[in-house]
Amino acid sequence: MSRKKENFLDYIPRANRLYPSVKNSAGHVEIQVEHRGFANFLAQKLFRKPRVSRIELDDFGSFVYLQIDGRKSVYEIAQAVKEKFGEKAEPLYARLSRFIKILHDEHYIVYENKIEKK
Image: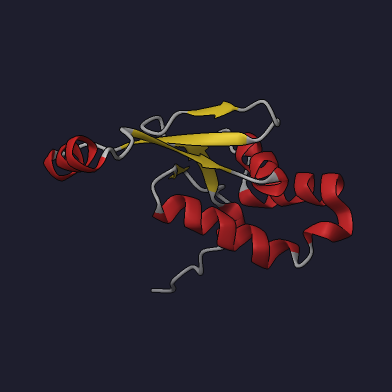
């Protein structure tokens, strides 16, 4: 039995509906994180912590996040980033892969089915 090696560039990310996003006045994407649970409730009441945090992405992050639509693969997103940012995006694949993995680790995105190659 042979094992197929998975290629991260074949993954298809999409935004997690639990974390809505909006564009702010600067044109950057802000991911809204609602703090739930008893400990967060106490922190909100006792220490005046916000109920919702807004994570603002920079130009690169905002562009990438807007490309994440549940249809494009990481490879296709990389091509769009390369077209838009050119040399400024280098090292493209290492930087993009790390950013997408961070978004996934924080649960801001999920992966759809991978592209199936024959």
